[in-house]
Every structure is written in structure tokens, then in C-alpha cells.
Image: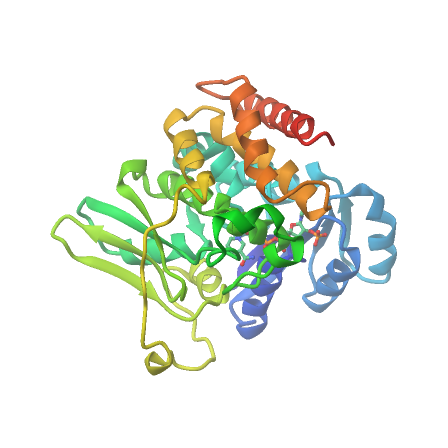
Length: 383
Ligand code: NDP
């Protein structure tokens, strides 16, 4: 039987690659629901191509254009952020792919898990903001979460079939756009430079997060919640070639790694097809083309965001939600050329130093912490 998919954020980098998988194996999937924020043109084209049942545009201003573009089809058209969460919980899908970016992904994650859906999760911010709440809900509802993030997919693949406790998780890190740039040059880096990721083609926000290593900090938090591993047992290792996607070290000293050329369609297809694997076209991995795989420690003075994220994880409560909210505002400001690259982490520190803190947050507390963090970051950046 075909798996019926809801793809939230279908017009973005992960969403488009998820649809590539569907195109490769149409006998396995049926696309029921597609959503975008503003890109109604691409959303309408996708809904037509995949004969979707429902299309949702989160930004209500584009409802009319989407509806007109889908006139003459049977596609149901809705608008608004609440509608995205509603379709995530909707009755006639088996799997929800959450490929939204940022805090906006939390409510649909909660809605999907609350309805007991299988969740293929790219939106790491859901776990950064509300990991404790999200994992408790998933356990209560027995709703599986399959990671799409390549590092977490790698760890998940290494853990399949293992029953013994682990010694540590080793998350690899490409180092982002400024890996080889000396610290003193970071003050003047441009948006164009920051968007030039050495290994991966991704959406703008995660590419900037990779350049500051906020992304790697978020991945430590994500790994903690997904695998129940304490922060002290998570190591981040610089690996410029991005061939080893991450590793697990066991108590007997064995280390398992998952390797391959950087291509997000591999972890996406694994999340969709687990416990099976896809038969995907493509070249065999050429070991001779990669004669050297190198590893190094991360320069934590150059990239303070990594330690800030680990500290947020230790503090629990709303700390990481505050970090995420401030980061979203600062990244948008940097992309809009309203602040310098170094201001991103400074805005996070400013917000964390002043924000209120809820130790056992409800969903409402996360919303309040997010609003407060956004306000504080805007205040710091004089936006
Ligand atoms: P993109 O920016 O490319 O796409 C984001 C998608 O979400 C788009 O469809 C966008 O719509 C939609 N969207 C944006 N804001 C909102 C909102 N407020 N409400 C509803 N929908 C919204 O992001 P990526 O695909 O790069 O990343 C998605 C998630 O996956 C992120 O959490 C990222 O960290 C994670 N991830 C991404 C990887 C990658 O290779 N790209 C790798 C690993 C993880 P529109 O097109 O209309 O703007």
C-alpha cells in the first residue's frame, strides 16, 4: 500500500528533495498535502504535478493567487499558519514530513504527533525549542519520529539493531562557510560569503546557521532529545569533507559510522522508507576520489555558539527556545543587511542574559519565550 504524505514546506530545499524521492518511486507514495509560506507559484505547480488533495499557503495574503492558480483542479486550498497545523493532524495521511524552517515548525510537529502520525522531521527547531514537550508527546502517543537531518539520520542508522548503552555520539561538522577564515576577518564577512556553504546546498537560514555553528549547536540539542544522550556524551568533530555523516562509539570501543556523498535525498528516503531502504539511482561512492578523510576539534573561541547551545541544553526549560528566537531575528537581519555577521551571536547572548526563564514550560511558555527573545534581539540590533 502507498504511504500517504503531508509535506510541510514542500517549496523549500528539503521539501523539493522529498518530492524528488516521490518522483523516483511513485509506486510507494501518494502526495496528499503540500504547504508553503509565500511561494504560491511553486506550490500550485507541485499540487498539479502530484495531484495533491490539499494545498496550504501559510501567509494568508497569497490565498487568492494560489486559489486562482489551482482553479479547475480538485485541490482544496487553505491559508494561514493554523491551517498548516490542522493539515499536519489531518485524518487521511500516514506520514508528515516537517520541512518547515524555524519556530513555525513547532505547532505542526505537536499537531502531527498529537494525532499519532509518523513524523519525518527535518525541522530541528521543533526539538531545539520544545524537545522535552515534543518527546514526551511522541512517547505518549507512540508516534515515531524519524530524523531527516543527515547527522541524526547517520546516528539513527548506526543505532539500528543495537541494544547496549553507547559511550558517545560523534557529530561531524563541515565547519561552514568560514572554516578557513581567520577570526580577525569575521567582522567584515558579507551575506554572499556566508551563503557559500562548502558542501551542502540548503535554504538560506540553515546556511547562515552553519556559518556561525548555531546549526551544530542545535544539532547537539536535537541529538540529545532524539537519542536521550546527555550533552557530556556528545562530541562535535570538524570533518571538512562531509563524507562521514556522524558516528556512534559503543562501550566496547567499537565505532560505527555512516558514510556517503553529501545528498539529502539519502536521509530523506531512509526516514520515509525505514526499516527498508530505497533503490536509488546514482554513482557508486568513489573511494579513490576521497583518499583523505580528516578530523579536527572545533575552535570554540571562534565559534561561541556551540558552547552557548550546550549551556542552553544543560539549563533546559525555555533557554534553547530563547536562543532560537533571538537567532531567527538576527539571521533575518543579517540576510537583510541590517546587522553584521558577528552580531548574530551577540544578539543571542544579549537575549539569553535578559530573558525570563520557565523551568517546566508549557506550549504557552514556549510561545512567550519566543516572543520575548525576538523582542530582545530586535532591541539589541536596533531594528
Ligand atoms: P527552506 O527555507 O529552503 O524551506 C522552508 C520551507 O518552509 C519553504 O517551503 C517555506 O515556504 C516554508 N516556510 C518558511 N517559513 C514558514 C512559515 N512561517 N510558516 C509556514 N511555512 C514556512 O528551508 P530548508 O528546506 O533548507 O530547511 C527546512 C528545515 O530542514 C530547517 O529546519 C533546516 O534546519 C532543516 N534541514 C535542512 C537541510 C537542507 O539541506 N536544506 C539539511 C538538514 C536540516 P516558501 O518557499 O513559501 O518560503
